[in-house]
Image (tube, rainbow, N blue to C red):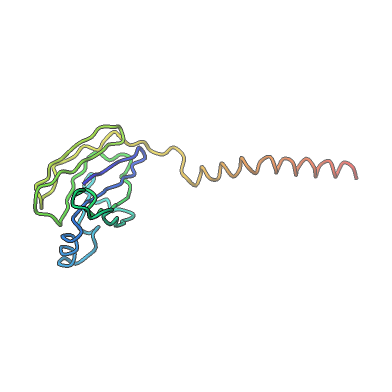
Length: 163
């Protein structure tokens, strides 16, 4: 499991499993894959905004890392997030969760299978966006259109002066 953060609070979570094992597990449990992953941030669940399955690249036994399928979950943490607790409800064996923070620190949490992680520090790595995407788009459009508006206005004034 690899959880990678960006400065804006967005995350990519890659959950790797043997595809045959995963198929059998998912058939025996109702609900989708994302329902088996819980990201508990400061006392509230953060749900992924997208989930995609990336099938194994290769089934060559000499390359075991390539023979796993990955679910890639994407979402966003609040900019003021401090703590994370993680739960993955499909496994029973211990496994590592690697967290790549936006500030460059890497944390590895060993999780005891069907259990919650300890509290993981996620604080201080996010920066709030100072300008929203909508505002940035509006400003860019205004900067592009402003010279044309000025040119039209000055041509209209000259045309009226010549009459």
